Image (cartoon, rainbow, N blue to C red; front, side):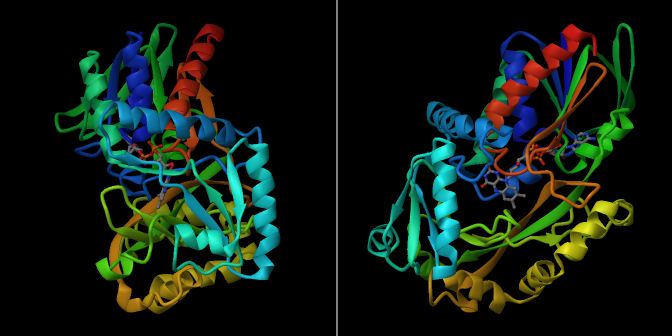
Amino acid sequence: MKVVVVGAGIVGLATAARLAARGDEVVVVEKEDDVARHQTGRNSGVIHSGLYYRPGSLKARLGRAGAESMSLFAREHGVAVETCGKLVVAVDEGERARLDVLAERAVANGVPARRVSTAEAREHEPEVSCVAALRVESTGIVDYRGVCGVLADQVRAAGGRLRTGTRVMGVTHDTTGLRVQVTGRDGDEMVRADAMVACAGLYADRLARTCGVRVDARIVPFRGEYFELTPDAAERVHGLIYPVPDPRFPFLGVHLTRMVHGGVHAGPNAVLALAREGYTWRDVSLRDLRDELSWPGLWRLGARNLVPGAREVARSASRRLFAASLARLVPGIGPEDLVPAPAGVRAQALARDGSLVDDFLIARGPRQVHVINAPSPAATASLEIARHLVDELDRGLVRGA
Ligand SMILES: Cc1cc2nc3c(=O)[nH]c(=O)nc-3n(C[C@H](O)[C@H](O)[C@H](O)COP(=O)(O)OP(=O)(O)OC[C@H]3O[C@@H](n4cnc5c(N)ncnc54)[C@H](O)[C@@H]3O)c2cc1C
């Protein structure tokens, strides 16, 4: 079977590698000139343990299995990886209860996590500030770009093609298959295929709509801005230090992450980006803005979250406020310890009622599977998401969908 895979982020490449390995003819179509140019190449580099997610959800199941398969894959293929563990810290008495809830969730998700005292937390992180902490040994750090390089090689080695600098514009279908409209260096072209798997990240919903697949959610781009700690300040952090998440805003909360190639990343915050690939405040796309602002879900989300939203914008504008958030975790970190680092933009699906789509979300069309929502921990879970997508594709083809 000939399959077009849209997007050479980690989800697309993992899917393409899986299809190619079983003998399908695979063409990966990527609009950028190289792989992993967007979310995958700009993330925190963490292999999440599967701690936070609603038990039974795709995130919990695929995230937990993915943590194991990703570590194994990286080790087998010589990609930099380390299972360094992490500390989730309650910095005041008010956060203790939330830490208890997280500890229960760890049990429900089968993630080995241990409550530790302040003294034991300081054996791992001598400078951390906390009244209690959760130690998760299975969390790791990895080079996701390196993983993508290996996956791309696997696709090619199995006879697949990577067409970079080429954008999928839409698709039509008839009884014999799909006609995928692409445009690239050589102009417009029509590629015939038996099926398509779209892993288009920040453009997932838009591509699905142009392919005739109905999706009642809109991708809203949230930029995550990072700093790097100066080398002196970095010595104060040994591994990964996370705040207890607020269940109302699960992806808010800056953390400290030692990166697998050295250095410590601090962040990310979360501000609404003014373009889907808007990596700075200067990146503005009128089309993307119109898309965001015309979605009722965004206004509902905004109305419910004025205060935390304003706090994130203030932190974006002030290095002092950013440092103050970090100093809650490791006292003494100041603005002078921070060096700006490249930002990433999260593709977060937002429902019409203003709720963030929490789980991974997949939509189907005739001979097509579209990944609509694949936020964190989708990099961790990517090899398992790929397995799931291939199953979905096969089931759809059997049913004739
Ligand atoms: C700031 C940040 C921190 C994160 N930290 C972590 C972490 O530590 N651990 C973790 O597990 N996850 C993390 N994540 C989440 C993780 O990075 C993403 O879930 C994952 O990378 C999604 O991969 P993807 O392949 O779906 O998307 P992407 O990597 O965004 O790839 C999508 C690709 O599709 C291409 N594309 C789009 N439209 C078209 C088209 N029409 N034609 C051709 N190509 C197209 C794009 O150019 C892009 O290359 C983080 C994300 C962000 C933004």
